Length: 441
Image 1 (cartoon, rainbow, N blue to C red):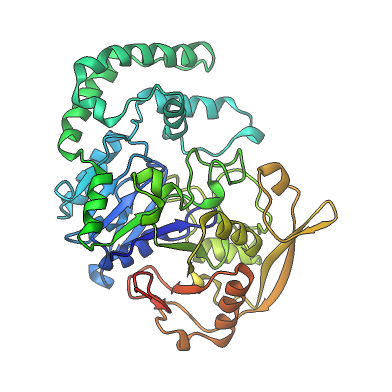
Image 2: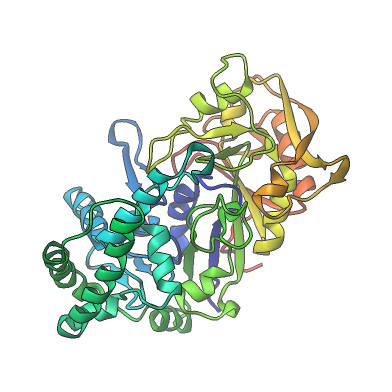
């Protein structure tokens, strides 16, 4: 029987999922993106030294850089076809054959011009304390239309004659909000429709029943890798609401976002940094100062190159939050952990781990739900001795400094999830494997 693996972010995103998906794709026949949009960013580093190449992907699954691997965009993704076209063009310019291996679910809702303008106009109208930190890519408004049952799905591009009246009605609705409430410029129908016609022509050859294909692959004994975007603490239901993304980022979404039953999700790998980061607004209990050069947060920010792949905003940095990880382990049903960026902590003499919080004088060992409660969390920090040796590029557990081993084992103990993989650098071979996710035992 084929074994399928779900790769999920367990913090506030940016955990290094792209490299791990690429690394695991050696054992998969297909990779599926099942939620989010092009607000997610995956950075892949391929090749050695002079031949080293970096790819920044937003929509296309990270497995695309592996030959003979099928890549699917599932119905849980909101799709900006224009961005997809640009991403494909960049990859194909480098000789990567994308269109012959990429398939799009007919159920994907589209991101259209008015979604982007709504997203940006709303954020611009808020005062500083109200800003969510959205990327302004139209993701939220597109998901709103989906839930309101008025979105345009990919399959509707197969019949433009029937679609046109719907676009007229939808544009009229959104233009009213843009002009009368947000005081922004409306979208012109002629320009929008011309863009839709181009998008329809491009996407038609890529449309495929993703759900049926995944079941077919499994019946042939082929394994599938499900790739999540963002992180579990940004989940619309389980994250620090309202400072969250607009989709479900947890492992269970792989089922509905790809159109398969949960019985096909055999192993859930949670990706987490050896410290914690966050982009945009929202509470962050273990946060450190990233501008003070004497702060460990400064080293995390600079050595870890903590800038958003999509926005280039500085990521906020802080100590590893084990209480938050325990929440992620619960809501995802994690099978194991992969810890990334261990090398960023090299040289920090005294490390700390957030093991819980004080909220109004009471101790809590689990991250509460909702931003209001999290904002009242005072971190309880446990000290751990650091190490001075370099862990960069180490690919053998026994070659790690003893204090680094102790730190990792402590994280495993606190989170209650076995540690199977450690990433010590951006390249494929800079990885310590303790247990392979695709092994049958």
